[in-house]
Length: 319
Image (tube, rainbow, N blue to C red):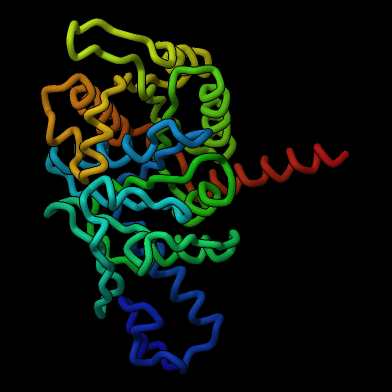
């Protein structure tokens, strides 16, 4: 097609010239849109966990709300294709994504917090997403390149548990992830897997923002005493051993569960609680990390180098 007629700011699906381009031209255009979108985001954080059930999505949602509450423009991408829970936690579970000439319009939680999730595309919440890696990679690319995120100070990506396809896809697509926030609980089994998340980040040359120890002790509402449900201090110990920052402890609070089920961000609704104060401190440390000059070390070259190390490791296992 005539390059002058191409609408550089629209997706191929919404372009008036759709059908006149070769697949090679469409791929190049899609990549250009992706790079343009990512270029308008100052800081990209992946929230990870080595295993499920540690409260990663709770941390991601409350971190995003905290940063938005501090006046930043924030995007929250729910990248857990098979278990998208972010909309429920933010009271957005009845919302849907809308299209526009500029692409996909994210759902607004507040004037400066935009949210995108696979849950917004489901007609039946009980329908499972049965996808292999390539389909998920394609969805992530659309969520990153075809969503009208606009100018963001932070993009928080809530990843599914583990160190498989999804974290790899996000890291490759963004190419300059600024840091990973690792969420764990204090018990040894969770800590073993959180170590893998730290190692994964290092293999892909992604700076580790730090470790969050979630469900760290229980404060009795009657006497005020502390009860160690899953032990305490494991996350801080792991951070020390792995030489990464410790971002803080979030106590186990039944009110967090109740508020999340009702779609109310805990950090905003119960601001004086221990957990809310912990989230605000974690948000402050993430802001400091994002503002530091060292947080920009993950580049296209870094991710490529990291992938080479992964391939070398796999080749070594086969010999």
